[in-house]
Image 1 (cartoon, rainbow, N blue to C red):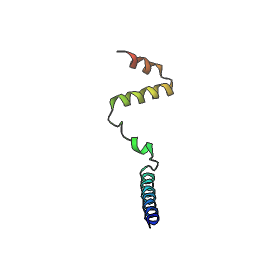
Image 2 (cartoon, rainbow, N blue to C red):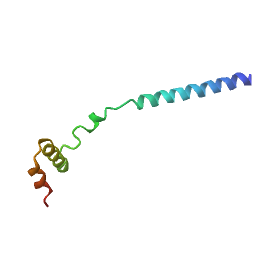
Image 3 (cartoon, helix red, strand yellow):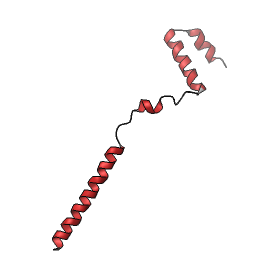
Image 4 (cartoon, rainbow, N blue to C red):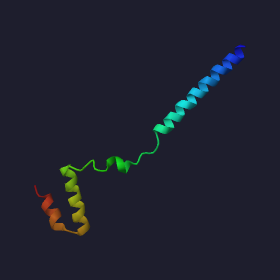
Length: 71
């Protein structure tokens, strides 16, 4: 009888471990990182400055880059 009890205990432990692993899988589903950060820099002045630098570089507007470098 102790073998059956031991087997039942071991089976219960395995089932509990499987349930825990299934919960971890559900929790760790891939998250769309873009949706998480969208809008997070909305009111950040430094971000607006970065966007202006990017625009100036893409447009080849060196005067804008020089004006922003001045203190």
